[in-house]
Each structure stands twice: as C-alpha cells, then as structure tokens.
Amino acid sequence: MIFIRYRCRKGFLSAVFLILISGVSSAWSIDAFPRIAASPEAYRYSADTDTGDWQALYKLAFWVSGAEYSADQLSIFSKDLSELSKSVEGMDDYRKGEKVLEFMHDKYLSTYIEKQTRLDTLFSTGRFNCVSSAVLYSILSTSVNLQVQGISTPDHAFCSVITPEGAVDVETTAALGFDPGTKTEFHDAFGAITGYAYVPPRNYRNRNEIDLMYLFSLVISNRIVELEAQGRYAEAVPLAVDRWALLGSPEEGEIFDFLIDRISNYGAQLAKSGREEEVLSWTELAAATFGTHRKLENLTNSAANNYIVRLLRQRNIPEARNSLDRLSALMDEKTYATLELAVSDAELFTALETVKAGGDEKDFEKAVEAAESAGVVNSRRIREIADAWYTAKLERTASVSGWEAALTETEAIILEKGSSSRLEQVKKIYLNNTVAEIYNRAADAYNRQDFETSLEIVNNALSRFPADRRLLSLKKNIENTIKNNR
Image (cartoon, rainbow, N blue to C red; front, side, top):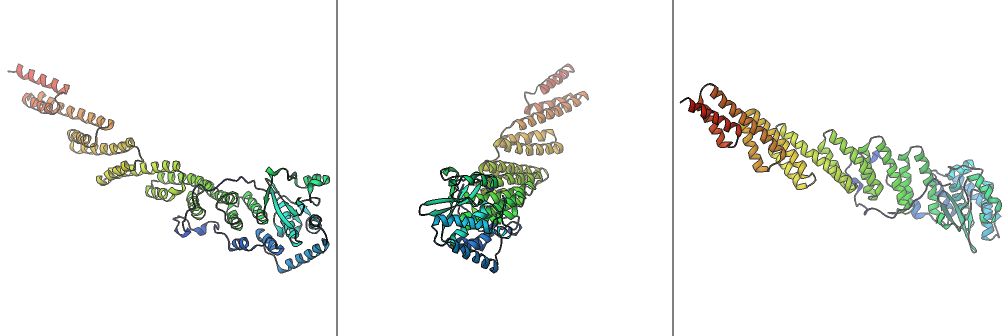
C-alpha cells in the first residue's frame, strides 16, 4: 500500500527567487535546520541510473531504502538472478513475467506488512508491501530483459510488464498477481492479504503509469510518511529534498508540492512549539532555495503575525520593523498590510511617548510627517496621536505658565495644524479656566472696594473675550456700583 495521497496542483505562485543561501538574512544559522540541499548521491542516481540495468536498479533500491549493500550481498543476488535466468529460458515475455513473480514469492517474500517499504528489510526478513515488492519485481524482470513500468493508484502501487501483445498488470503482493484480471482465484487472496481491491486497466481515472525512477522514489515517500507519523518532521525534510532531486528537481507539480509539504510540516511543528523566529528563518531559507509557494506563504503569514505582535507587545518596535521589512516578500498582501499598520502605529505611538518624556519635538513632527507621507496609518489616527502630544504639551504650559498662556498656545496650534474635536475641547476648557481666573481677580478687587481696578481687569479681559457673558455681567455690576457711589 502507498501511504500518501497525491493531489496535483499547477505551478508556483510566483517566480523562483534568485537568492544565494549565503545572502539570506536570518536569525538562525542554516546548520540549525534540517538539510535542505540535495545530497550528491541524489543527483548522481538521477543522472546515472540506467533503468534497463538491473545492477543500477539494485543499487538505487538500496539507496532509496536508506541502506547500503555489501559486495557479498550483490554476489548472492547475482547467483539468484542466474538461477532465474535459466528458469525462464525459451519463454515468451508473458510467461517470463509470470515466472518472475512466482520466483520472487518463492525466494524472497514471506509476510505482507503494510508499512514495510525498504528493500534491505525485505531481503533480511521476507517482509514486504506493495512498493518494496514492486521494486524487487522490477529489478528481477529487468535482469531477464523484460520491460517494466510502475502503476500507482491513490493508495497502492504495482507493476506492468510490456509484452508484444500489450501491457500486463502484475500485482506484486500476491503470488497469483500476474495478469490478475484473468484469475478469479487471485481477487480473494489479494484482498485478504492487503485489504485493497485490484484496480484494472479500464479504471484509468484511478491509475497512473509511472516510470521506474518514480516507482523507486515511492520507497522514500513511504519512509517520509512513517517519520512524520512519529513526529520526526526534521528527518523527513532531507529525504524529501533527495527524492525531489532524484526525480529531476521539478519547479512545479506533484513532486515539488510533496517536497513543500514536508518543509511546511516541519515549519508547522516549530510553530506549534512557539518558535516563530525559527519558523521565519526556515521559510526564508526555503523560499530562497525553492522559490515562493502558497504553503510557505501561509506558514510565514501565521508565524510573522505571532512574532511581530509579540515584539510589539514587548515594545521592541525596531526589531518588529526590521522583521517586517525582511519578510515582506514572503507574506501575502493582506497579512503584510495588517502588520505594516500595526508596526507603523506603534512607531508613531513610540514617537509620542519619546517626546512626552522629553525628546526632541522636531523628531516627533518628522515621525508624524513620515506617517502622513506613507499613508499606512489613516489620517484620523495620525491626528489622534498628534493631538495627544499637543494636549500633553499644553498641559505642561498650563501647569508652568497658567491657563491663559495655555489658551494662547492652543489657539496657535489650531491656527497652524488645523482644528480638531480634541483641541476644540481643550480650548474650551482653557478658555473657561482663563475667564474664571480673570473673573476671580476682578471679583477679589471688587470685594476690596477697589472698583476701578476691578473694572480695569474686566475691560482688559473683554478686549480679548468681548462676548463672554460672565465678564459682561460683572462689568455691568461694577459700573452700577461705581455710579451709585458717586
């Protein structure tokens, strides 16, 4: 049985980045992550394997199994092949293919184990599954000059022998599996062993013809699935990279997507552990090596959001900005825009806190101008931040120089920066307090019977606040008192 289900998608989301790995700006060393460069052996087997040479296939089968073979093992196997070759002398391809299956089951196979995909384990224990038996059948058939191809279904793999009369299916997990459509007794035996039904040639929608390199690569795929089932995602990544290189390093399609899935699964494991910085460095490295992909983008979006939000909460605004700029090309537009707004707002608010703590007001004004120019933070929010500074500055003026000075400064700010509801509210308070303060001084003079001084205070105030009812009423009272006292 094959443990993976393939869903093909077409292409990249964007072109491959032409970025050298050494140029990636990351918080983590490449050495901290699983190997992401294909092994030399993967490229060598990809380039040099002659699928018509049984020895080349034998060596490839051990390599995809993650094992090494010895000279003694190869010698013993060669003797077995000599025995097989003699037993099929004079047979046509159909009978020869059937004889190979019988020989394989008699000589090597003993127990079907759903997850036993490695050829070295098959040889040492007799345990096999659909992939390992199909791989061995391919090697044996090639040694007697049969042309073989692989067949994959959503959850199974087997072989097909190409004869002059046409292709003949070979269900390698069953001794009766040669040309299974012609054998009634095969189906019960096969189903009992594997739990799966044979997929005949007419069900072409559920079958895919695959070459021997792809068939052998399924050994790696199944090893990867087993590792991931155990939570060993880091170990799965190098195997996926090697499989990708073995199959020609495609830049799109199912093989490439399978690789990206392994890279994403490892990143997701890091994310579940709260290691967002490592996730981001990992996706940077992957994108620099293999180009952008939707799954890498989604992983980056999630990790970047969590990481940058955490930096903002920690008030580490510079690092939040650096991280956002570094990762911008790896996020989708929506996530970037959301984080850009959060970082820009935090920068503006930090500038406010800095100037309130005694920083240079010119720096704050530059920050406001930069925010307005960038257009990320909306104008209402920018004005809210700016007004917060103006209010703080005015409160300082009021405490040092009094209400009237604060009122004068408020009016100057409104004239220069424009009115706002907050400044108008502040102005109203300072106006009320200024007039109240003047009124009290005039009232104090009046109570001391110093009516002329009281009237002078009121008249001076009315020159600035001519319509204030309190001052007008007080003036009238003072003037009546002065008149009555004459």
